[in-house]
Image (tube, rainbow, N blue to C red; front, side, top):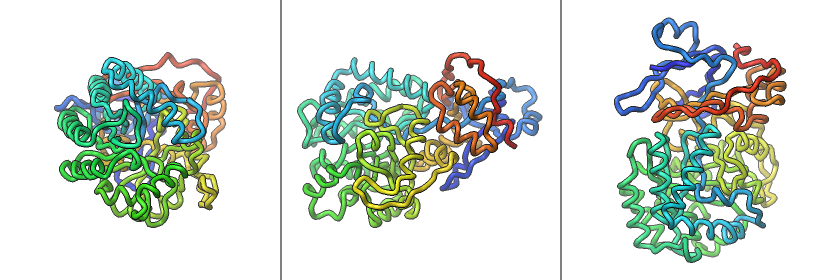
Length: 455
């Protein structure tokens, strides 16, 4: 067993809304199960729990905050090296930067080198679970999941399907792409802490035959995941309308091919109507909200009010490389900004929402876990969950230390972390299937009021 003493923040994994739990002076205890995965065995008040575990050594992290490891619900590892590349919008950006770069992932050695850097960066930022796009090359999946397995990480990923409207080097062949998908699924799904996601890139890139094949695989393997994009950009939506004039909407295209169900996650979802929201809710498919990429590419603003009124599952995602940062704090800040916008990207009105810090944090942890169908497994720290967690320093920078010291409530204190923290606040990252990673020693700053001040 292992134990830590710190302030603790976690969420009720069974609640479909941000139901947070907090201990100002808490104890987190974990133990390794028969499969070698570290799990939470106790969490709560220090004074109460310490008496139950008198012989377990305790790592003292008072003045710091332990919280669930972050979950990135949509990210492209092959786009690591195109992050920050300027373009006029989504489709030109794909053509100029993304597709040419992704062609390099036919080289297993190159894919492996990028995969190592990708996971280094995500772990440094406190991300412990990710739903990831590879490329159309099977070796890109092997490189990514092999590296995740070596680190004990929880990762869900898949080979991209794109047999049309794609350049040489990334365009695959319909029948072979489906055979490769099934072979990869058989090799990786359920191995260690890994899962497989059937991954049509987006409707314009996939022929009807490829979409039908993806739907058949999804039916044959109901416990695997599905991931794709939907209604991200005005030009993209217009293009889909010309390709599928008889379908009611972009989302309905996926529904016709059997690609909407539990464990299906669709990125963006900016340009959806009431019928689309209802379809997502009925099928229990989820949306990966990707605010930094939507801002960077000028795609538009996600409609939180409409999604929540319909009861749609959702979570936060960096969407690197369209997204501008691997940092969950950057993503939460952007989500707060876009939620407050009173229009979408096409000028249509939407209801502005002010997201609380608890809500933002939930979307990147327990809410994202629910969207993946992994509630109670990751994203929570409830008893029985896998012990993926981060140790955060509220005095990581002089400005953060000064601002958190003046907070008058837990909500204010957490909001300051959301708005001002970055990777420097991530002091330790603990992975349930592997040893923890540690950042540099904590710098000394002026007096800071820690979360233990709030009871």
